[in-house]
Amino acid sequence: MAYLKLDHVDKVFTRGSTQSEVLKDINLTVEKGDYVSIIGHSGCGKSTLLNIVAGLTDATQGGVLLEGREVNSPGPDRAVVFQNHSLLPWLTVYDNVRLGVDKVFGSTKSRAERDEWVLHNLNLVQMTHAKDKRPSEISGGMKQRVGIARALAMEPKVLLLDEPFGALDALTRAHLQDSVMALHQKLNNTVMMITHDVDEAVLLSNRIVMMTNGPSARIGEVLEVPLPHPRKRLELASNPIYLKCRQRVLEFLYERHRFVEAA
Amino acid sequence: MNMPLAKTTTSALAAPSPASPAAVVSLPKSSRSFVSDTLLPNLRALAVRVIPPIIMVALIFAVWQILCMKPGATLPSPSRIWVDAKDLIVDPFFVAGPQDIGLGWRVLTSLQRVAVGFGLASVVGIVVGAIIGQSVWAMRGLDPIFQVMRTVPPLAWLPISLAAFRDSNPSAIFVIFITSIWPIIINTAVGIRNIPQDYRNVAAVVRLNPLEFFWKIMIPSAAPYIFTGLRIGIGLSWLAIVAAEMLTGGVGIGFFIWDAWNSSRLSDIFVALAYIGIVGFVLDRIVAFIGNIATRGAQAN
Image (cartoon, rainbow over all chains, first blue to last red; front, side, top):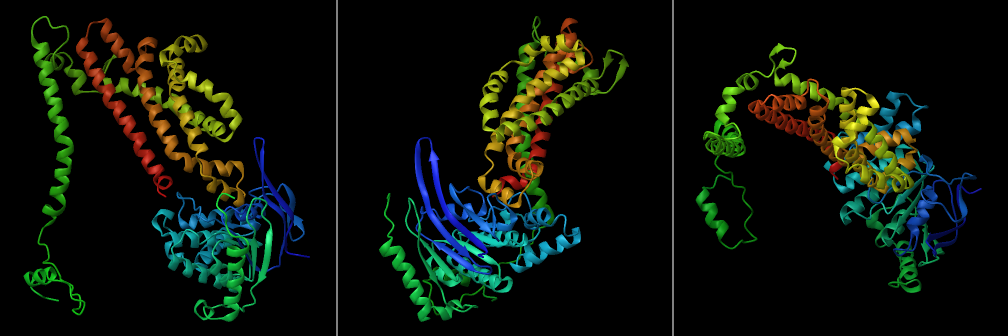
């Protein structure tokens, strides 16, 4: 049985009398410990797909099964790292992580254990030094690290990343990608990531799900990335498998499913 | 490192040559003391803010004095007020008899009423505002009613509340309450409606229950709006209390003005006006100050 299963998911947005079908018959299974990227042009509904898995949006047809049980409301078992970090600006870095920890482990862990667990997760993303700062006092990359710590601290069954590096500059992005790769290696968690960056998808994931253009976007192709972990950014630059995977994704995105303006 | 300053200046003017390594020039250490560094600029900043208003007040008093000095003037001049109402100006807290007490006591009585009325309005206003900010239907149903109610002048409520409570003190408090609650409700509702979807998503993923959502997300996120409402509300309460007390009687500063008018003590009225103005200003500043502290985090992003 698949760990996470998207079963014939359709999504239709209705506004007044106009209906627009965003997603059409999405079927996808994700095994435990897998790292799956979903890539597609902007507007193809990949964020909608992630929101459906997160439970923030309801599917019109079909559903999402996690360990064989249907999930249709948001919960900490599918923690999300949001694109714009979404830290609460009135809480310190520590309290932002603590908010989720207190809710998830309020009855199972003692006060001291929760405190330790927050610090442990901040340490995983190397943000312990800023634990008493407010989000406005730290950089964009640091905010995203805290966002990752907040999600990890809930011990999610599936970690959902919604274009987590999209708002960062190239150097910070590369640095954070390495961190996420190291964390996945260390914790072996199940990750589903939305991205529009081909290199990022190939570098991080075991499988790349390529979406066709909307409306009525489908899964066009699923590409396995048979590169062993841990992966090194510099060594991969000339690796033939890496280049071939990259080529496949580029061809899919820019030849077969070229983005058409106002399609 | 220890190049003479003049030489560095000339070499800096010359075209930069990539071969020469950049030299760090240490500027001569300043020998200024605490007095010239910290004290004087602060004093100057203070003087810049304090001196112009003092000059303006002096000018206004001078013009007033000239206008009201001639015999037959209808209003007392500042010097006249000083002679007539010296006891009220000098000692706000004297007690000379049951109805002959300092203006400080009267202001405190009025403030007590404002505290009860405004306190109730704050609690009820924030809760009601939160509800109609959360619910589209409550908003549609109640917002037009609130928009009409908030334009009713405070004193128009007084006869109704006198009829309902049959006592002056609760009536005055009710007038404060009903006057100050509308801006609090409306601003809170707007603040709640403007909570970013991101924060709602975070709350949903963490699974906060409605009560936790209220305390941990709604209140801090809407705090800047709420405090704007509270600030307008406290100003309106202070406007309303004076008018209400004029009609209900008792000990407050409003009744004092009415009483002074009835016994033709015009000078006392001027002193009372000064008290009211200063207290209103202080109230506004207190709410603004609390607001600044409480919303430190929510504004910065």
